[in-house]
Length: 596
Image (cartoon, rainbow, N blue to C red; front, side):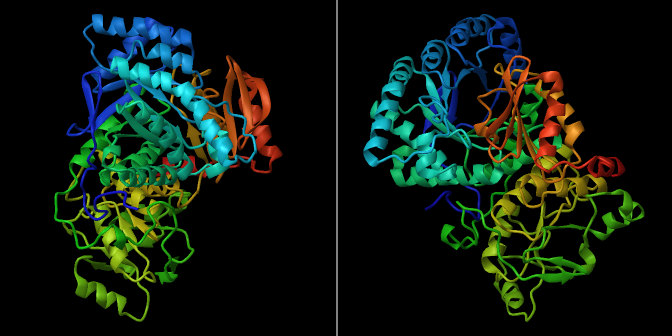
């Protein structure tokens, strides 16, 4: 199956255009940036003010939650107020669980987002087998619920997003396909076929997950399936890493998921989901789009999709020999190592003991790294012919996009040779940049390759400051799931459904648990984003009612209606009960951040 035109060079996927009000998605349009307001949808003036603030910051499409028919009806007043104030940004109604709310919202907005996992199905996590006849009957039941919305959208010229989320698939899909990228794709295609049967085509797809590996695999599989369905299945795609969290970690995780797909030419509109005020999402999204626009326009190296060294639809780390690099084991089943230049090491050598988990492990100049241009067949063959496995990298100055260069290297190099990844092929000394740009570039390039299974060590050389480059290296490894060295947080962005202040709550939970290495905690503002969308979290903190919190172990609710003021302490108790609590004698990650 083919998921992009050429995995070794950039070419944007060709799609049809879908109009959302006065904004076109796909076709010849630029990649669009969107976001979501966070206030109560029934607060008309606040909704108008937040929407206008986002539009002024460069947000091209704004989404507003409509959890009930009453909320959906109030969209009329919000949209009218925006238009009276001269703001023509298209509005998207976000629908979960209630087809009736979708039908009302479609009267007032330019686009409706539905989630096939909960639009016509209640989540029971039931275990049952469906015969083919029972499965077909379920599809007909969904058709009866979904087709009226499709007809209304067609009549009114309203667009739609068919957006599946990892972890919130229907029981029917879960029982046939599991909680997998394939299940996500099949769930969306079922709804798309119903839309097409009504001759409605003004829709886009999304395949969101808090795990970048799952997200990337799902979008690739979707594109491959659309290609198989036929040329007229060329619908645009909305990209996003859901529940990315906050701060630097969230920006890195978003860049790995969104940036890697954009680099393959996949994606027509994006939303960066941060547990911060929505206005902060826009600069990150715009910067990711700008990175895509700067991908070098070079001739495609020799090679086709069939020549890649990895399975685009299923993660597996590239198998290599284990070798010794200046006393540090690299490759094989070893951790992905962090490499620094000698100049960087000299700047931090006096405080190695204070760097905690952010220590440099290998110095580039003493590691015997082999540098080559992957297009130089003679040089590649020389390495392949060597008796011993060697640590190999792409030399600086090669005029290829970073992702393309390392994919080509992996496809040409014998698998026994470990590979050292770089974030750029130019030193920071020669191309100083804003740190956000540096962070997104490094996360996109290195993170994408790690999710391809390529890479046994990484070198972040696009950031000159040694502390920041080390922190960035380790945080990319954590976000890509390649090396877990600190607590992992999955936190949804705020919206009108949120039942507590996500930003302050997330800060309190982090303060209490940041020392728990390898524990994954999900912080969800409401039942829509939990329990299902917590995906593979160990523990969950979910808004159950105003002022009340439910606690989860995995996807199982175990504590109910806990007063919000007690909930963090009760979460700590729950972690203790399951043997994953340690007392915070020190907080290495915090100390390390301060030290660097």
